[in-house]
Amino acid sequence: MSYTPENVIRLARAEVGYREGRDNDTKFNRSFGQIPGYPANGYGYPWCQSFQSVIHKAAGGRPNTDFPWTAGCAAATSWAKSRGRFYSQPRVGDLVMFGANGGTHVELVVAVESGRIKTIGGNTNDNGSANGDGVYEKWVTKSSRIHGYVRPAYAAGGSGGGDTSVTEGQAGGDGTWRVTKGQTLGGIAALLGVSVGAIVALNPSITNPDRINEGQTLKVPAKTGEANKPTTPAEKPTKPTGKPESGGYTVKSGDTLGAIAAKHGVSLAALLKANEGRFPNPDLILAGQKVNIPGKGQPALTGGQETAKPSPVTPVTPPPVTEKPGKPAEKPAEKPAECKCEHKHHHKHEHGCKDRDKGDQEKPKPTVKPLKEGQKVKPLKEGQKVTTLTEGEKSKPTKTQGTSLDQWIEQAREELRKNGDKVPSAAAIKARIMTESSGNPKAINNWDSNAKKGTPSKGLIQTIDPTFRAYKLAHLSDDPYDPVSNIVAGVRYANATYKAVGGFEGIAFKKGGY
Image (cartoon, rainbow, N blue to C red; front, side, top):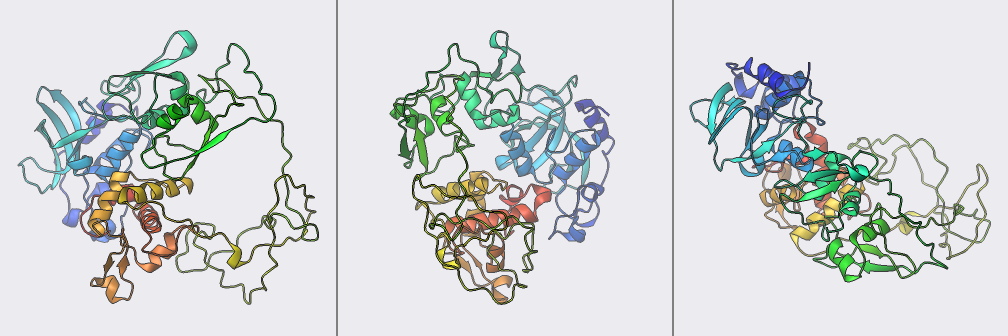
């Protein structure tokens, strides 16, 4: 079956008249999957979004590629916004999102007229009541209740979708992109499968990647995968003589990459190139981060110009303990022992727990001094043992920076991103925090069921100690009241527990506990 608006509408219309069972138990939730903590053995959750997910999948859509596969409206809205698929005006086949942040309700648009749209939705009614009980087709007046429209990536040829606003260019093989309301460079880049730096390099007029305007036309890489290949300059860049002089800059509160580039007299494209891989989201930089500034001996880059490649460097291998002490080396790779702690999950002992089958621990090894700059070392021989750091010599936990809630949230998002975790929006984290603790990092709940068990909820996102220890990152603070460490643990817990509704983002705006 071709994934088109017509086929989605046909399948949805066939369900009109369906009524839910007791406690929201429906065949759509049964098809979507269980969510722990809800009635009916985990199938009794609100089902307006799960209805849409199941229908779109049955019509041939690819979950989380063509449409948001989730049971949470907020998660569906976030999915679309991050991919440039969220619009202010409807088309047939769109999902209309209701309420604050699009997190209250969803229905399928089947017809559009001036001032109103016709929809098919689950967990709704046709009498205006707030209590939905089935699948209905009805007319809905356009109003402030509508947050916007999610546009699935329908197959080409469908009358309602398939439009990404990209047209192939002529000279240079580049296309163009017309910016719509709410889009960011990061979202456009994610939709095209290219880097933000690649788009900036084609648009030298962009001096601040945090700011683009609705209606603005951007040049974009024509083909996915070619965006990261530098264009060939008319002349090869002059190779700098001697050792390039490069400078560094420490980010201050309120800085942006565009402003830093302007301050140091370099182009934004050159700055991004000099920091390639360091800022996956150039819209997000944190106070205290280091930014490489192209120096006098390092030519500033324009467009797709390449820097001269440095001479190959032979990897340095740590020395054996019999030689002059150098940088400690890791033990040869081996299969990690199975974690036997109660909070067992798929990780590599990030939480720092010790294997319980080790028995008596060996005595600490001698301290190994760090390598000096330029020091030569001999490679290890196969099977040779090396000295490792003792527990007391391991690096200290990363300190929380900043004193405001917004700064803590951004640092936590950066830690999640670096760890490869799913990163919710700052708005979602803040909403959850305000519900849980009103923004007080020292908050503690001494009255609920967890407190009666001796494990009260603590901190900004109100985690209990076992959950905090299970989901915190090893290099962050062990203190559950530490703002950043608490946020990170709470987000990772929700991502793991509520996958069916999009993880943390899916429960962020829910009232009450999580």
